[in-house]
Length: 217
Ligand code: GLN
Image (cartoon, rainbow, N blue to C red; front, top):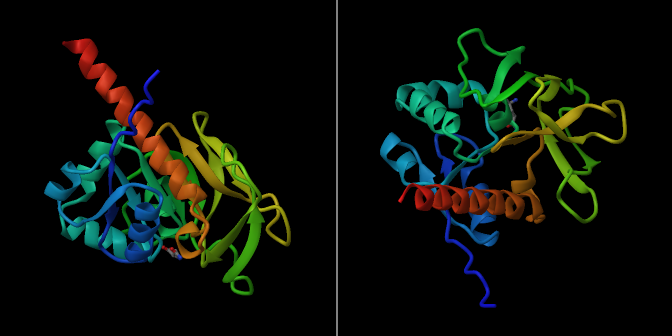
């Protein structure tokens, strides 16, 4: 049987603020074509979107100024795969604790997150986290003024928790349908497993949308 060709996928990185470049590099080395998204027209050209770590209040403000809040919400609602790390997780939450009162998000994952949750003493740290569905050893997860997840809705799958230290047991990776979020930053380490996994998710969802359009013919 001939090998099935791997579909080419284009994944955008929301390029308003934060570690955009690191995600572009990680996605490229994970086999996707990656590009910056700063305007609604650019959003239309991608098969999936990454929302980087940075500062969620700034990303929120700029997303509003660039007219991206509704277009991103609509695409997520229509099933576009999306992955948010750290500030990106906050942007995907339906509820944010310790946020700024005027901060707005995209939603997509029915969960409550707490901003800067790990406290002052543990502003930045590394801890092992296992991610459901990603084979291999634990991630050396890098947390920088990270949120954690305090509540998840019924449709949300918990993918990972902190396993050691004072924050052991805290939820730091989740998925609801095609929306995925982590409190930590895999883009800052050389470990590309999570980006590869997300690229696969985008490929599978492209396959399914092709099947759906074939069915319609
Ligand atoms: N504390 C930041 C926020 O509230 C997130 C930090 C990060 O993305 N590294 O958005």
